[in-house]
Amino acid sequence: MHPLLLLWDIDGTMLFTKGAGEEALRQTLKNRFGVLDDLGGIEMAGRTDTSIAKDICDRHPTHNLQPNDLLDAYLEVLPECLGQKKGGVFPGVRELLQWSHEHSEVHNALLTGNIKRGAFIKLGHYGLANFFEFGAFGDDSPDRNCLGPVALKRARDILKRDFHIDYTWVIGDTPKDIACARALGCKVLAVATSRYPVAELEKHGADFCVANLSDYKAIIQRLES
Image 1 (cartoon, rainbow, N blue to C red):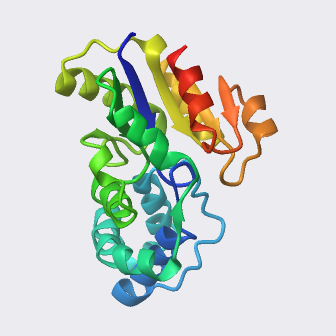
Image 2 (tube, rainbow, N blue to C red; image 1 turned 90 degrees about the horizontal axis):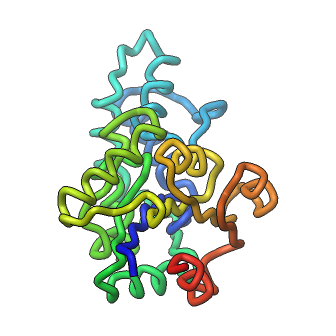
């Protein structure tokens, strides 16, 4: 078996947080910076935290907000908001992660728009952090399509394995995840666990699309093939 690299998105793919991240941003803006903003009109799905933070700061020029300051303060509020929102882990995610964790030729890494600290706060809250050691994050670039090469290089450098692009999969839930995989040149497993149905994800060119990961044994067979 060729070494298999699985590059995981977080929000909407592994976890549903019921808007905890957005709520943390709203609370941070209000309580730390005195800015009232319901975040309406700012696209969140599939984007990087750094690009979202820039958009927020740009539309409040008189407050002199800086993206890094906003995100640092957001991280302080995020754990409490995760607890308040009572989200969870999508079906099949733990089982697929556990299977890959138990097979020496299969490796998990993150490919997420979350900044690194935020990513591990979310994963830790839901008991998934131990499945991941590294990845590419919103800290690495505000452009989601630039993160794939970063994740692949880190996998090769850290694990000392020459992962072939044909055996590298992005697992995500939005057309932006599909675009990210295409920018890297790898395959994409799309899951219709958030706002995009199977038909739309297939329309955007997903190599393999499922409603969720609950039939993880069939998904494993497809990934291995």
